[in-house]
Image (tube, rainbow, N blue to C red):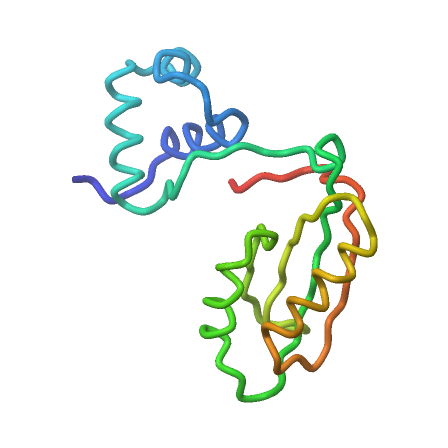
Amino acid sequence: MRNKVDEIDVKLLQALTENSKVTCNELGRKLGISRQQVARRLKRLEKMGIIKKYTIAVDFEKLNYIYAGLGITLKPGVPVEEIIEILKKDKDVKVIERGIGTHDIFLRVAVPKNLRELENKIHEVILKIGEVEEVDKTIITEVVKHEYI
């Protein structure tokens, strides 16, 4: 199995980012390769762990949900991996990102459009984590661009 990602693989990933529901036939026509070549490339990218899953993009406004970002700074010495495992179990936490910088963890949460419910969710997350030094909160009013590659 070839482990190197080439230009066609990148174009394939970009096309899937635009529409994960597109067929192998459509992808093949767009990229100038056969349906079978597309299928083989997808299988290889999946085995390599580059494609983790096929998903959708949701318009939280139309769903009548509030989407918020939480930048969380933990107290020194707190085991980040354990906190992440706890947060993975929360159905309202949609994205967990670990980083280097001002915050240790950045979360995106979605709750039905109600500021009281959002406030309760933020407090619930802080209680789950326990050892929080600081939380920066941002209500996301619109996702203008969301691409992975």
